[in-house]
Length: 613
Image (cartoon, rainbow, N blue to C red):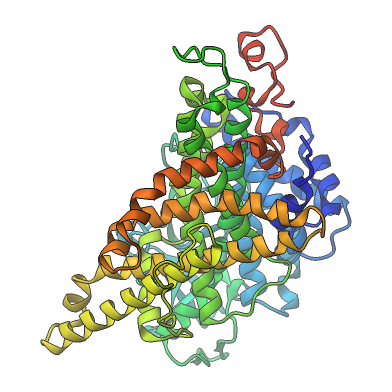
């Protein structure tokens, strides 16, 4: 359904990293039979084999298209492929970003300019081996700060000996258990030279060939999660010898006699440098989550226009006419738009400079988008009634994907606390100025008001956290005890900082649409603002007691938010399908029967179930 405003909305959602000319390539890649929706994937090994067959298919099409650089460096092609992969199969998304972003990314990041790794890059580009990332360890949760896997340098043979010194140090839970899939892993290990620990480095380690794990590599398969069917495993090493060239040494140096030097000067700084690799995962996560949020919202909104109700007051009306459904569905649609705007701002065509601010912003956007995607898929599923729980309609797939990313690419709570500590330390950060909107001047439908209120909250929380830490340390508390009583406040500070950045992105999107066309732009921007206001007002309502206590909102404003949400829903109803279609969801790839015009016939077996209009 293309309407008067679809193009303007689609353009702002697409962002500069998703060029229009790439659409035909995506359709060509994902129209292959290997991507035919399969609600029943068969047994575990068949499911794993399908994931890696799909990965190889994408890689083959990219190479046939004449790509001359690794996909991780071709961001205008990488991000759309990741987005469609997530919609097609969240497990494929994981395989894609681990192979291209984390494995190839590690070789390029820490082996830059090294001709002796050219064959490795070619193997990965051809999918002769599938890449994997082995960072976290079973006994250390999601923290990479205390990795105990050891890579000890053997100066006589100019090799490294990789071993797992204790059960707690087994790598957990990398997706490397699938039979018949040759694997090349990036393994994070503690470098030991002449008995001394020299810091955490990445090493390239062949794990298995088509016949199984290689000598010295232990792979114990784990039961796949029903939320995300990956071939997870516990991996251990027993004297695995690694050629010197497979050490991704970055700018560190080992001399022929075993002397070690590292320009970073300390193992702690080296660890931070090595872990900077994870930023590739944050960007990928934002893109994938935004794509599945969009698919969830669009399918549910489309279905709600066709699903008829037997309600006592107006039997036969589509459920989209009901205000409670509108609040759920338009709220989901609003969240999906916000997630897509965040993705467009985060995953641009040019990689951002690696600065403390850019790194912090990227990982906070991962947290924000994950929470939005989880909420959107849950709302879309619930609003779709019993059919929402049907696996073929994909809501459970997408909700499980968002669940899984709570802890993947660093745990969300840990990222919030890291962000708060950096904000408090003033690392590339200055708290917002004290500029609260005056009483009577507030327009709760003005994006500038949303951003200003978030900025005031951020400034106050920052001051509270600074005062609390100063008081705690002043009373003689050790750092752990001082922070231990402030973690909740710290999380709220990081959440509010992230929310302010998101609202700035939202405000800019409305401004961009307003200027997109002199005739239709202002009206298109007004509709977009109404949609995004649902997200902003729900965020505001979540803290309305705080705003009321601080005098930033009055009682009438707080009491009036539900009625304001209803008025927005009423204004948005005529445009709901057009707003959903502007998300550009590839419905055949989703394969949800309820997205079809005749979903009853599709599910009853009396009509084709194509998931298309």
